[in-house]
Structure formats: C-alpha cells, structure tokens
Image (tube, rainbow, N blue to C red; front, side, top):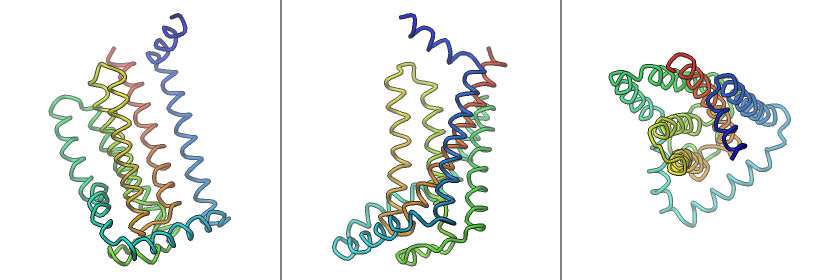
Length: 226
C-alpha cells in the first residue's frame, strides 16, 4: 500500500511529470533519428523494406478486394481530414474553456505536420512502386498518415482519459485510440504506399511530440490550476 501511495503521489508532482515526459521525448526522438540514419546513410533496413513491399505487391495480385478495407482505414489518417477534425475539436475545447488543451492540441498537431513536411523535403525518399495507385507524389519518409494519426488519436485519447475516473477504462480508451493509429500505419504498408521504416519513423516522431505536449500540459495544470 505504501509503494502504491508513493507511486500515485509522484504523478502529482510537476517535476516528476516533466522529467518523465522528457525521458519519453528523448527516447522516441532517438528512435526516430536512428531510423533516419539507417534509412538515409546506413541502409541496414533496406532488406526489410524490400521484402515487405514485395510481399504486399504479390498479395495485392492474389487478394485485390482487401484493398477496400485498408483504403477506408487509410482515409482516417488523411492529413486534410485530421486537420479539419483538429480545428473542430480545438474550437470546442476553447469555447468550453479548456484553452490550454486547445492550444497544445493545435500546436502539437501543427508541429507534427511541419516536421513531417520538412523531413520529406530533406530526405526526398522514393515511395514503393504501388504508391502510383493512390497518386502519392510526396516524399516517403516519414509517413505523414502515421505521424498525424498517432498524434491526433493519441491526444484525443488523452483528453478522453482525463474525463474517465476508472483507471482501467481510461487505459483501454487510450490503448484503443493508439490502436486506430496503428491500424492506419499498417494500412499504409499494406497499400504499398510506404516502406515499413517510413511508418515506424512517423510513429516515433509523433510519439516524441505527443509525450512532450502532454508532459508540459500536465505540468502546467499542476502548477497553475491547483
């Protein structure tokens, strides 16, 4: 009971939350740059990417109807759609006087999108051959669908969890929200418009930004609203 009490007490301390979120930020940022280094310079993941895209190409020839499901899923991570939903949710949060949440939601989503665009320009990675089917013309690395959906659904899950008192239910909601993002990432690989490493990098980039946003927001709430 004492250990449980001490652990629960730690989550009420701003310094601990900030330190924990920074640790997560640096872990995910390091993972992103590790994948970037392997893809851009070392090419050690090249075999994994080539084998996966080869399997997906063969699978499409045998099971073309599977595309309908994954096409539907992939639209859930479309940048324009997520940007529109973000604007709606940010406006709702603002008018419900959750201004801090609205600012971090909008700012984190914008930072994720800008980061994706910049890294796409810098790396200018060629997409798999199947990308022409969906008229994907931008650079492959990192996956914008993976990054934006991870941040959007992750932050949305966080907001919902704050309003759920039952911890086990809150955990399930957050896990479900990230699972949606995970399925979107899988759809990008299945549709053969991204390499596996593009999706992994997108997740890592968004996870770093999401960790920092939530950590700073929680720290701010504890310092100024309690």
